[in-house]
Length: 381
Image 1 (cartoon, rainbow, N blue to C red):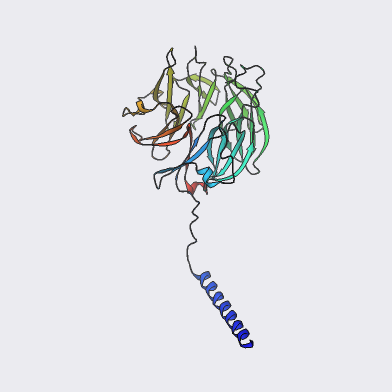
Image 2: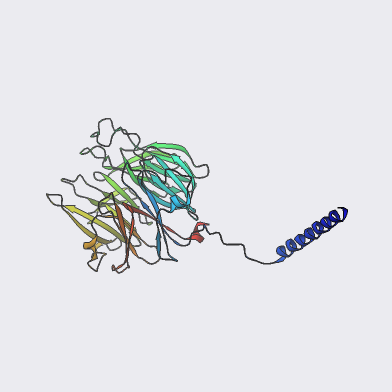
């Protein structure tokens, strides 16, 4: 028995020495650490809005390395988020390595680690619509708490912009604006907010609210057009604001605000759905006849020459798009992405066009695909 104990002691000491030797060897060995399999490569996120009231908003990721669209990446990476992404995704933005998804029906701003598609936090904001950033703060438009989207404007309260501290992920202030504010943009020390009044047909709002970011108070309203929607700065002091119109006498249109004077000028763009890339606006125009049959057009407008261009889809494949919905321009290649919501309750399509306007590929996306966030790992870390 004693011999067995001595042998066991010898074996234990030998094992410890061997382990120490291996540990010392590993410390000196210049071996690269293992790659985190959760880290995402370059690509873009696509927010599928889902169908209102169905809790089926989803987040996809297109991987440039594999040229594949990864469906429902948020649910796959966040199994503990049992309700998924939530009800009705309304906006998606990437800022300082984090992804911010505005979930309108669920009334929160979802904060996500963009490098891994992992949930960080939910910030409660009633009926949120769009988000913009400046320094350590996010600014989120809110329709507030209107009792019903079909109340004709009776008792419809003013909307507001919530100010979110990005360090604490808490709402720290709010500023009252017009009814049902939509997109917004920071220019210098001012925040421009498009008021839609969309719940109050035919009594739409017609103004852009201007907020001083130092005092976080509304300093003026600029008269533009009914039912305002998009707000896109050109980085040179001009702001392009689109109007949905009133669907009767006033058609959809886009206007330009000179932010040095806040003067408003019309443009020849007859569209509410616009995006800006370089010197060009890309617009999806949908018009209807007396029987509400749609006609789709894909417009370009050069903001330097102030001239309309030809269609940005050049190979006649635009006839295959049923309900054009989202649009984005890849910042490096100039590729044009156009989503097709089809019928707005079944899976939509994601179409990629070359910068010359020819279809490169098309894949199935989620329900009502709409919002893009382009992701570069080195820029996110």
